[in-house]
Image 1 (cartoon, rainbow, N blue to C red):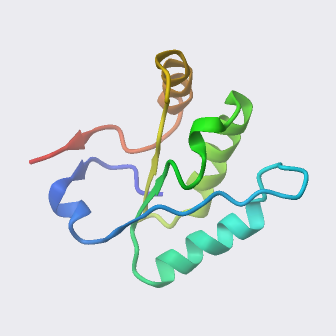
Image 2 (image 1 turned 135 degrees about the vertical axis):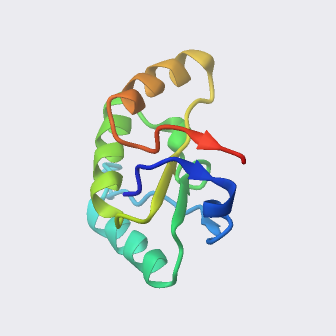
Length: 112
C-alpha cells in the first residue's frame, strides 16, 4: 500500500475505484474475494481505491474496521492508494480515526 503524501497530480494518474466489501454468508469479512477484487483493479491500472458507501464502511463494527484496515494494507501493491472512509457520525469518526492513526495509511493529503 502506498504510504507517502498524496497530491492532486498523483490522484490524476488513476481513476478512483469504489469497490464493495465482500462478506461470507455469515456476514464476516471475506478476505479472498476482496483480495481478488484489489488485484483485478490493480491489473487494470487502478491505483486509487476508496472504501466507502459501496463497501458499507459506515456500518462496520470497530473491531471489523481495524481488521479490514490491516487486510487492505496487506492486499494493496506498494503504489496503490487505499482510502478508507470514516463516519458517518462524529463519535464513530473519532474512534475510527484512532485506528487509522496507528497504521501507515497516507499521512497527509495535499491539494497542491
